[in-house]
Image (tube, rainbow, N blue to C red; front, side):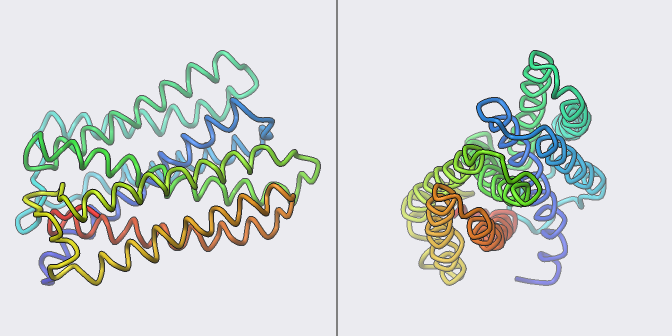
Length: 277
């Protein structure tokens, strides 16, 4: 990869990574808070953290360079504005969510609105940056699953630490999140197989990801950042079920490191070469 390509790609990779962390973490918090007895302190802390990370993404959005050597295209003005508006709304609504947790109906409305703002942000990014509308569909799916895996891994780590200060908290919240992370990784693994064998990226041919210049990175992506985290998530689930929360948190730390590396690698490949894996 040339220096010019790398210099243009990195701001977009940074945006994808930050937004994936923020959006996924908020979704996990909203679901966990609604169906389990997770503490208000955890929900508020993680929602505010998601807002802060999203605010960093919003700050970097204005500095995104115009793509000249990348596989993605410069977004039209209207989609550019929609992406930024959606991200700004997500930041504000995530903060509001953190302060209406005690009122269940308001929490539901605010959480749904924040989730919708996140979906608008990801959709506007995919449609705006993809060369064609057809390319935008798999790109949007990729952004969504990256958010679920990466942000979910972050939210589960924060929850694991909460058991250190709230030892009487039931194991239900962490078990649910471990299951959600595992399910997201399984979906990501299935998408990897489909895209690697059939294509799906910008002018991506079947088997191109596993046979071209990106073959080594694709193999590492599949083995180290998808299959390995599946094992870790399953082990974390089993240890959480036996209430070994410190062990589960340690496994989730390793899981986050692996999936974060995979998110960065997947973003680099798509932005620079249009390859989905």
